[in-house]
Image (cartoon, rainbow, N blue to C red):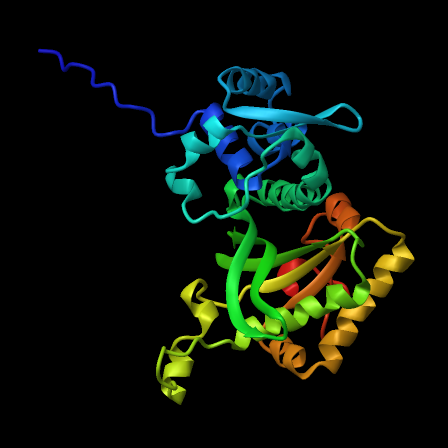
Length: 300
């Protein structure tokens, strides 16, 4: 008597599914970046063979950047397709509507993807748990309506699990600085993070007790521990970037809210090109509090 073979459906997503999910999450990705995210050990042609059918089906569109780089974004049909995918639940990033809009947003978005790829490449080499969808761009949190702001928008939040020498989970807020804003405005972002760290929403119609406040800090609704804060800088000379990091350290030392934040939350800054060249675990991060001796991002 023979036992009939039972064929089970595959549990792994297709490359087409994964590519659509990544484009949806990041909003814009070059062909090279999709290759690096999904199939770094395969010939680039493999990703080309994935993207062409998606374009022919009207699920993605693209814009051409300097250097003839193609950057892909979701077409309206693509947004409809991924709208209920579980891996994208809760994502609220504004979709890109046209090739012209994609070109205008490309510098900031693709710089963030470069940073993500540096962490992903390092994690793969170490055997750590960090996947292409573990970097979530443009994460918004509400803040009290004071000082002219009512929300915190992090350029990204990522989730990372180190597996050796022991298993440790990390989370980080990431701020990408391309030196397009003043150094003072960049440093003020630390105040916004400090306000979020201390922010306790009050129940409507009554004043919370001390016990209430300890139990319902706003960030505790999303994170078991407040994520470390990483500033990644690029787009200027070494001297300019060093000065901007010094301004971040000065803000940490001089502003009471930020000083209090730094006592509980690791804060660091690094140059993107150093992260790419040496890896994020190398001594390329400057702590924003304390001695300022360079170290790896998990050692901040």
